[in-house]
Length: 201
Image 1 (cartoon, one colour):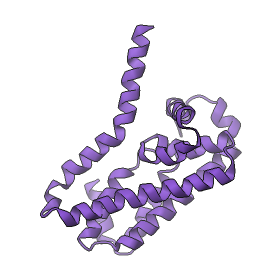
Image 2 (cartoon, helix red, strand yellow):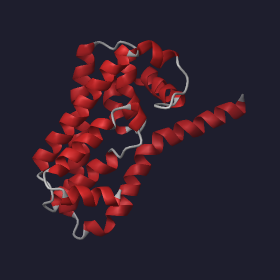
Image 3 (spheres, helix red, strand yellow):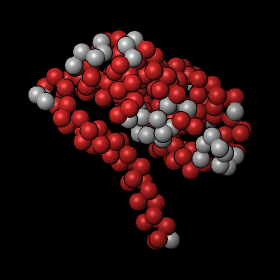
């Protein structure tokens, strides 16, 4: 992560291209491991120090997140039978899809919005939405809303925290760790709940 941030900082306008590619690719199931929340926060934080233009940064991240979801939604439609009926494949694990399905059953189409803030779900939700044939108009609406809330919200939070706290860069690493932990919390709770349920059975 440190190397990636250094690369983005020193790449000039190419830094925006790198960020676009990372956020775009994170929408695909095989690359769910790419940094999302932590990267948005960190780049927003760096923007507070003049390394990025905040408006351009949010615009690039927003377009990347929305177009990534559109591509994976179409992929879900095209590969519907393969995705819904297959087991583990080298490009995704069935357990991740099952977890997203549970999320989808609980929140419905709002998964496209809420799932933006949940690792793994964020990368599988649009593919599943396409596979279950979520209406295109509803998908696009939630995609746009979720995209701006996620990219705009977390990036500007990093920006204003960097502005508000003197010497905040000294605490950047623990802040990023805290963000990663909070974003993983739903998955941790679900895992623990599943283990308890299995023991009771």
